[in-house]
Amino acid sequence: DAEITQSPRHKITETGRQVTLACHQTWNHNNMFWYRQDLGHGLRLIHYSYGVQDTNKGEVSDGYSVSRSNTEDLPLTLESAASSQTSVYFCASSESTGMNTEAFFGQGTRLTVV
Amino acid sequence: GQQLNQSPQSMFIQEGEDVSMNCTSSSIFNTWLWYKQDPGEGPVLLIALYKAGELTSNGRLTAQFGITRKDSFLNISASIPSDVGIYFCAGLRGSQGNLIFGKGTKLSVKP
Image (cartoon, one colour):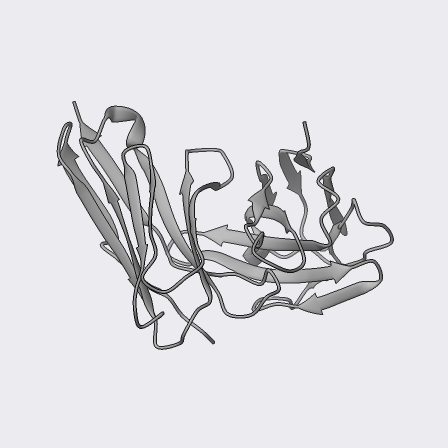
């Protein structure tokens, strides 16, 4: 069965370290997204990609970067982790056009920056 | 930025009761989606709506796409304990998958 997986599920890192969260989907979807979820804020879009070599900034992109070298993967990098980036991160993917625009989510990565 | 106003923020209900929650926006959306999130898990899609006025059911769940395209509601009939979780609405303006999410409705069900 096609799926979307995130790794690691839990991560503790120190302030100032570079951290990369992995997202891999086997749906062959063109669209991929990274969200962060914080109490009181719901899901906020960090970065998104509509295809290979395409990346775009979302609502809360400062301090984060992504790259899209193939269809299946969209790794999220925190260049220099800060305590404000402690959060639960969700990756999602969806079809590019037409009626099938539903996004499917991974199980999340809980990141703690100490 | 764009916002979806989702209400209520939380609900405490008795098992067997019906539940209603809604989302409103000042902007028009082409697609409305409803997700459920269990603790420690990612959101799971419940219902997708694509046409203004559309009413769609999924078991005990019913959702409608408002005629003005600026709102949607989700009803859950005869709630059961496993309905507990956070329900999110999400709207899509264009044909690409850049969703705007509401802040969620946390549902608690007393047996």
